[in-house]
Amino acid sequence: MKALFAVFAAVFICVCVRADTTVYTPVYGVSSVSCPANADTFITIPFTRPAEFSGKVQSAAMNGEYLDVVVAGEPHWSANQFVYDSASQRNYYYLKFTSGNLEGAWYNVRANGAYTLSLEFGEGELSEVSAGDTFEIIPHWTLSTLFPNGGNFVKNTIGAFGYNATKLYKYTGFEDGHIIEPDPGVNNAFKAVYYYRKFGTTDSWMNGKTPVPDDIVEPNSFLRVRQPAGEASAVDISGVLPACATTVVAYTLSADTAQDNYISFSNPVDIKLSDLTEALIDSGVFTPTTSSAPIAEDRLYVYDNSRVELNQAASKVYFYRSVGNIGWFNGKTLANDDIIKAGSALILRKKATPSPVAFRGKFIPFYKNNTQ
Image (cartoon, rainbow, N blue to C red):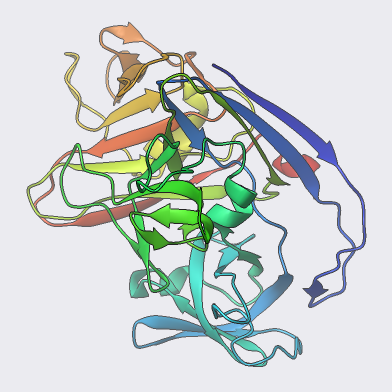
């Protein structure tokens, strides 16, 4: 089982509208993942779709549960140009900050005017937005754009729904334009199970008996792919390598209850575990232990596809010690130099807290300064 990544640059004048009409150099990449028969494989998405607009914040203010952003310049958008419509516009969009305190953070677009955007946004982060912050508007990956016509996965071709097809399991769901978070607690059940059906008049990605070709696969998430017995698949994913930082959010959803967070980082190459220290430890996302004994507070479970099996266990489980011999540990073994393979899926288990909490951590890829 393997994941291969190729990255290449293509220079062109951006065809999307930009507030400053700047020419830039996007970097494209291709990820190839082999999915053995009768086994689970984790797939992460290190690339985005091409941005359709790049601009700057002129001002921002909360409007109820949404953030209203006034965009610098005159983009002259059509009303709700970035809002999904099953008949005429089948993309869901998000805004991703590319500079400022929220660099790497993304928020779903709920509405837009000629030069305004309405975003799903937590009021607690309003102070982090400043005039002049740059951003991109990017269409979400969907099942049908990631894996057109079912990709190379095994398809359901008989009357029984989902029979003998590749299954894609996802810990978050999607309904009416909204992401459905995992349930409070650990070892959560999957929120969605997808397969591709090609039978009769149906030629679509499905969730149960419902066609869902436009369900999204949001940034920093992952899919567990289960191949049927006797049939392997090879999957290619191509897109734009993010030129800025990326962020992950970890939280507890219920008081006094530990919480699993299902995340990935946009790293197209192998990195050291210590490369995640700034994003997880320095940001407060991951709670370190202050004990000299190998007793974890939070835990990081890494799934790197090194095991060819169903219901595979984590390849490694880590915690961080902030006293004595400081660093990442696997049991009693110092693990700062352990390799996190490209495409690894991560489960960050937050310890129980007296009330729900949320933290955001920023990961800066090694190539950032070479892509702008």
